Length: 92
Image (cartoon, rainbow, N blue to C red; front, side, top):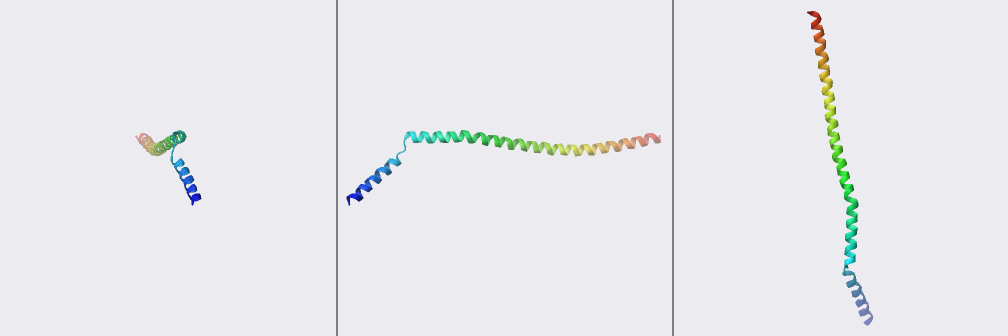
């Protein structure tokens, strides 16, 4: 019976020692979390900036393509008007 009590006392002693968190443990944990945040947050920020820039670039490219098509249509209209003008000028 005394062996059981000794084992139980040793176990309780170990269990109570592990439950007590020291200030050094807390500071080390805080340091690790801070270091991880310092490494991760710039990556998140850069990734987010790249996403927004690529979205802006895609929007500008769509506008550019639209303006190119409008330019083709307007150029065709100008050529048509020039052609009509040349024909009408030669008739009169």
